[in-house]
Image (cartoon, rainbow, N blue to C red; front, top):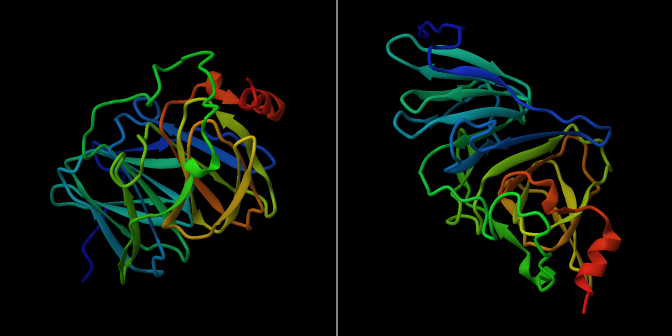
Length: 281
């Protein structure tokens, strides 16, 4: 006989409405540590290739706070607290479930092709705002020496089980950057283009956690295009590189791990300005 499960959100947990920036080219949701996330980011993982109706266990008590999001499809989260487990359903990319570190949890009843995101506070790390100066460093010079050779495609760790696959990343260990912000693009129309900017000091990792798209990198002298189509493969983008995303497949989701909080002064959004900076004597 199946155990009785309450459908209410258990004490200490909460459903969170996440920010959503809608536009015709697709929606964007961004999560920044100590802002939308009530903790510092210690690890980011996503689970995928889950057979419909399976049960996936990843949450154990004592591993720190976590935020769960259904990036694609839907699933339920069973929270093991005290003697009465509770079940919470997730089905929107702009809604998350915040779980404290003293509860265990598992994912059940995933829909076909569902993808889940888990941002955790553990293992802990010193808080850093990026590798090149303080937040809000207005007018920081563009890294004119960076080239597309500083960018690379990285095969990410993947754990495969009958219950599905998991990729887990720890900053400066599994990926060559800190992670202070996580954002994702979704509901992108097939064939759409995104991006079209460079960063003065920000580093990023891009992953196609669902579907596929093409990443075009430009250092002002040479251009390189890479297609992402696997949830355990990412493109690392160094500072001072112009990037564009194009040829999205229908239903594709682009997950971005960023090394610093959002700072509009860090963006170069005009290509001519980028070219002038890269070719300055």
